[in-house]
Image (tube, rainbow, N blue to C red; front, side):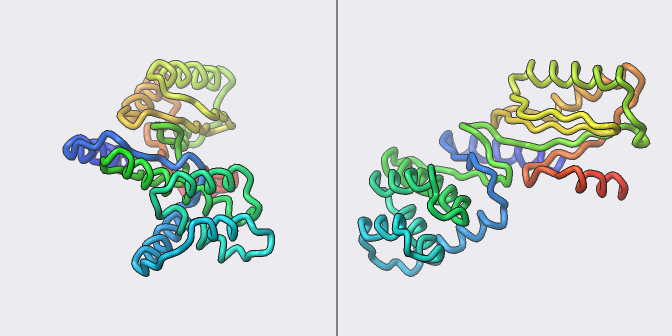
Length: 241
């Protein structure tokens, strides 16, 4: 987990040093690969710097006959201009995409348009924080995986201790638990936390509190904002460990 914690600390420091207090977090869960594909395409169109008609691009976006590839271009072009009408069009489309394949792309276009519009209206630099798990408002979403020592099964009492201590420590720090799943020899927590919060110490405290009742949790745990691991992926990971 230290890598993520160091990265977050450096990012907080950079924003503070540059006096940036306005940043944007993608709320939807969009794979990092698709986010990067969007920004590469966005930069490509921006370098081409070709003029386009906003209303024509909106019409193409909502056309039932246009291809997905052409609509990708429309979404990206509309997101590239500081125009309220363009932003509202992207927002309307994203609320009910006519093409399911464009759900992630329209999500990226919406946050991109919001950044450009905010920058134009405020005259202040805007920052986008990329995360495969997205976030909400100014909160980041992370997935955590905790295991028992030697992968021994948790007893009913230990499960109760885990539930009680982690819920208490996390909620005390005003961190939101979105999902908490306890299995036989591991448990996972999906959380949302404010950007300026040191979650590492909170989770370490919870592990320490649990281990006062028998030292049954591994002190090393997975903490990632890239993806939510499935049960099969977790089982494979535990076998490797």
